[in-house]
Length: 294
Image 1 (tube, rainbow, N blue to C red):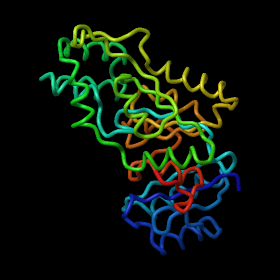
Image 2: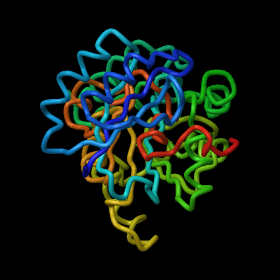
Image 3: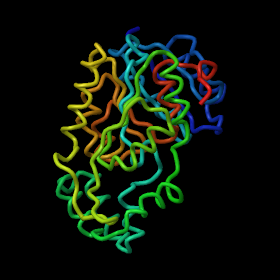
């Protein structure tokens, strides 16, 4: 049994009942183990036999708010969390929120959505959006942080638990340091990397510091941080939702598409569409009793 199949329900749903647990045991010919009763259940399987089981398990949870994942049994608890920020660790796209304050919110959102689906070049889309906000007062940043940003449920618990077990947490975003520094501090990240909004005389210039941190820079961050920590990319868990996260998700030992765009879901090893960020702890084999206080 070289792998583990995991069922993760939407938090609070208690959607994994005894019938599901019993049937999973029959399908895998094992005794499934609860990571959180009624919400997270795992069972050992063989990678070779899983394709045949997958269809049956998917049918079992088809009408339930439950995610199905398969992960290797070895090296489950990762030593690095490398996470995207916008629509991953927070519920918003910061550039969209700035755009709303600048009165060009809908146009900004259209470009953001297209870029995150992989339809537009990330750097070109970023520059185009910033030009639309040229002249926006700098205090709009503080207004967005104070009034428009919400943290994704489970984020603090994810980071606190991984760090309690010796992991390092890095926030790597194609957004802006003016936001990542705040989010990193609030959630407990060890470091953050992002682009810099250029500001002159108290207003956005419409420009961004070069070089722009895009998908290649996210992979570079993964390589640099793992090398510095003396670990390999196999020891890293990456999470994101947009097209610019795909190379990072594919290179990390465990790449998770969290409520992600279709193109990202197609290419990520694991997809979480019902769970929150604590799902990433269940994927690593943590049970709810292992969760650290956030």
